[in-house]
Each structure stands twice: as C-alpha cells, then as structure tokens.
Image (cartoon, rainbow, N blue to C red):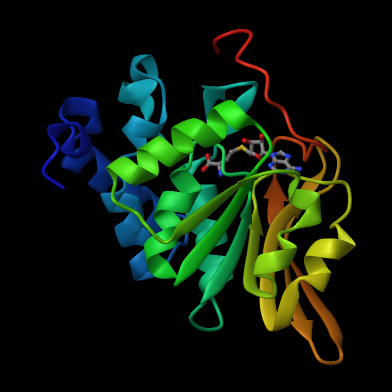
Length: 228
Ligand code: SAH
C-alpha cells in the first residue's frame, strides 16, 4: 500500500496500530491472521476525518446514518469465531456499514457476499474497498433477513446488527458444517452467538454479552439527515 493516506501518521501510524493489536492479544484474540489484518487495515479511512485520530482506540465510532463502525475487539472476535473450524469459501456478511469488518475478513476467505440496507453507507464501503484493492467482495443493497438466496449455501454467515431472534432464512442458507456468528437479542441484553449447522441439527454456543445496533427491516435510500 503506497498511498500515504493508508500508512498514516501520528495517531494513525503503524506504531499506534501495533499498540491496538497488542491490546487485542491481551484481551484473548489469538488468531494471528486476524491480528495481522487488524494491523494492516487502515481503520482511519473508514471514519470521518475529524475522528481519524481516534480510529485505533478500541471503541465503536459513528459513521453517519445513526450507525457505528464496530469496535476492533468485536471485529477481531467475530472474525476469529467465524474462521474457527477450517477455511471458508463462501461467506455472507450482513451489515456492511462502512466496510471495515468486510476489509478485515475478505482476504481471509475466498469470497464475501455483503448485504447492507442503507444505500449511502454501501456506496462509501464500495469506494473504500476499491481503494484498498479488495476484490473478492460482492455487494447487495437489501434486507439481510432474506440472506442471499442465489449465492447460498454459505459456509460462514456473520452479522453486525442484532435481531431479536436469528432469522430462520439465514440458518436455512447455511451449508452443513457452516458457521453463523451474530449478535441476538433486545438492546441492553444482546448475546453474541455462534451456530453450527450439523446433519443432526443446530449446535449453539454463546460467546459473550455485546452491544450492537438493531437489525432493521427493509431498505433505506434516504440521504444522511444529520452528521454524527
Ligand atoms: N460491519 C460494520 C458495522 C456496521 S453497523 C463495520 O465494520 O463497522 C451495522 C450495520 O448493519 C449498519 O450499517 C446497518 O445499516 C446494517 N443493518 C441493520 N439491519 C440490517 C439488515 N436487516 N440488513 C442489512 N443491513 C442491516
């Protein structure tokens, strides 16, 4: 990456990113490929310039349209949980948002099919991923509750918005042996869960307590009303 915007200076420099990776290790992230992606992906280009100096803090930040870029720890944890169990060829991601999670994940799998319901966010995510020369991503504007029928089955499904219950459609689009990682539950009481679809049924494990934006039905083409 030769673009100076990507390498960053000061609070967006390589040393700042190394410190973030060190913190994630201390918090229990062990997958080295995931940690390396967190070190490489310039998170500061996914947030407003005014917030760039805070891009490597381990916190969620506003990205407009009332949405947030996920906390790096959560992105690392979810990516690690999705990869656990073997390589993935076909992944469905719900909630592209600014595209940061997509950028971390895409080079670690064969293809990501990513769905977002807010057009303005999807447009920006496409631009960022193009700038980073990440090419194995297919974008769709739509309601993630429908999954992506023509691309199914998936051996991995990952969502970064929380429905009250996991949509049956998504479980139906999982291949046998496929893994689904997503937050579920009402605001203030969400859990991150990992499902594996087995021949005999669904295996379910709770990974922890989390706080995500809600899963919302339908598509939004409105432009941004207020800046964060
Ligand atoms: N993955 C993003 C996180 C974005 S926040 C990141 O790396 O930062 C969650 C995103 O999920 C928001 O952009 C929101 O618009 C989107 N979302 C919520 N409900 C959705 C649905 N039903 N279908 C598709 N996207 C949805």
